[in-house]
Length: 114
Image 1 (cartoon, rainbow, N blue to C red):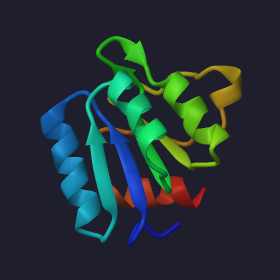
Image 2: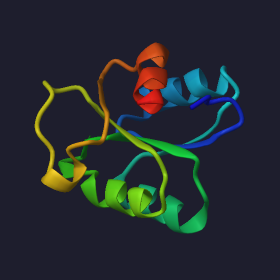
Image 3: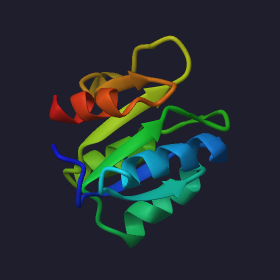
Image 4: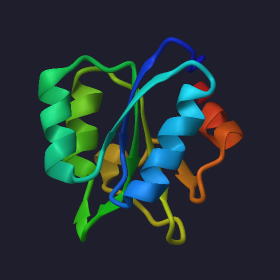
């Protein structure tokens, strides 16, 4: 999936990292919006339509799995991001692509291309 022209939801609990990711995606033409908590991310899903989402797995000690499920139910492609060693996810989310931090545009593109 090309990112240019796509509405991409970013959920990252470290604002500086999130702003850098937002800038990275905007530099390739994506319309990116940053949410810094699970609750804010869930509100964004209710308020807007998204073409894709990048979700930090651990958000202030809470996992982004409910958010991923809501997005996937709306047929929005999701990519997980983690700064920890890759872990296993719940069975229903095992097929969601995962990238390692720090964020890398090439890795993001590969993850969305499947």
